[in-house]
Length: 185
Image (cartoon, rainbow, N blue to C red; front, side):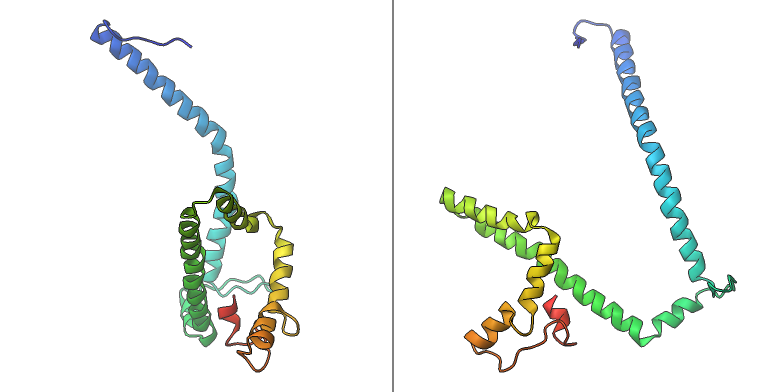
């Protein structure tokens, strides 16, 4: 690779070199766009069609078996927003979203701050390994562990709360109870 030195060159020579560099950068960008372009085009056509089609269908009274379209405008949206189950679903979704983001952002941040304060190198390595462990455990195993934790008959949570600490008189059905299911998640 040749390094150009513009020291002692005239202003027109400097402009030529800079102009050539500009065209080289434009050529690199164009090459990048040519490589990425087909993937972006396929993505836009594939997903764009689905989005536009679903928006159009939401404005019609589409019957799948009859394959008929009757344009109703925003009537479907007003019907959905006046439905008790839809508004309750929005509330539960907002509740889950708030606690999910608090749990997935602030809790790891707090744990990372505490782990960064550990001065013993071996203990620090152990903490970091334990913190990284959930990232490398396979998802089916995580599912089985959570299922075991919440199991009503011999789950670890019920064992600790009912049998050891005697905080509860009966074993709650964590995921089957309407009042406990959302906080359990």
